Length: 128
Image 1 (cartoon, rainbow, N blue to C red):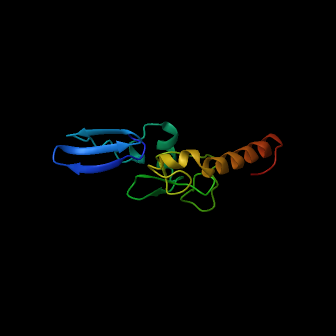
Image 2: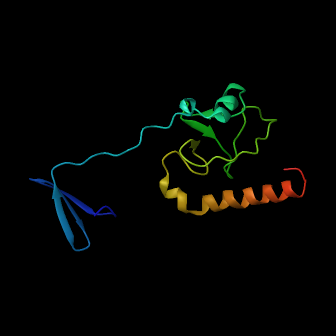
Image 3: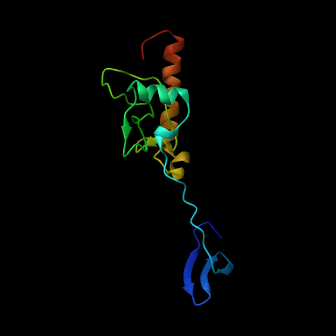
């Protein structure tokens, strides 16, 4: 019933119709996750990067900026941080805050290719 049902308001509640099934419910629960908050992350790595101004916090401290390949963008334009971040705390780039849909598309493959390339260069002792 949850995979794109037709929803109609009826006198007894909401009618959900999907394929050959129909149900009516008198209650719906909004299960939206709380907004991500980068400054509430307890990881020492994240805390230290925030304290040292290494990562660029965006949109009211919700997450951090990443490039098109999911690598962290530093507040200092001369720094390159070889750390990738995918998920709710990566704001508006590879995998946006609540973009579960993006988890299975071309963007994670883009990150994986760049990550594999970076690792290969590291193994060969060349510059990133």
